Length: 207
Image (cartoon, rainbow, N blue to C red; front, side, top):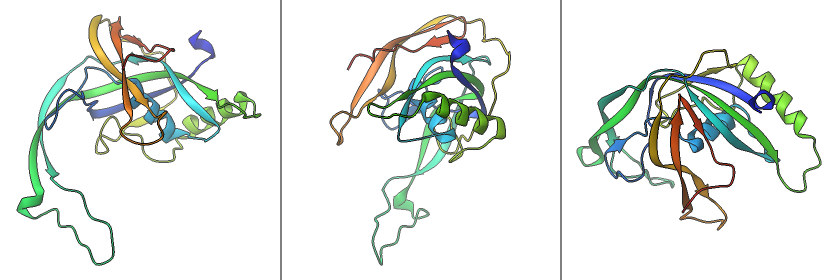
């Protein structure tokens, strides 16, 4: 089945796919989440006439964690004429602990799903995506969970997934944007890594 799907390979020195049950301190899932994979695909090629459906995520390097401290800000910059925001002020600064992944690589398999009422053939979008991946083109630099963890991407190769199987528990699948306004509803699924392969359910998840 995956032979007919689109694929892209991504890698980075660090990644953080934050678990929502942790609040201030960021702790990553052990593998890339489907919503993060969709973010990578949309960074390479986004179009309003289709949406991405992630099918599988292959973990290509051993799962390794590292703890880091990062300087962050406590408040948001206020927009408007004459308003300034200084991140170097003591009251705006905070140092927070994060548990992130180190030296990661993934292969994402997905398919574009044409939106209702769109007459264009999906093959057109498939070809455009393949060309962009081959040329290294993107709308913005893909990142793995956090903006500072920028990712390299390119055509998928024949690297085998890691030989690791584990029940990962409930994992964030995506957000339900059906209401049209925040707060959006998070959707979860029971994730399992089977010999380095995370399969993504097609029929949504549990709220």
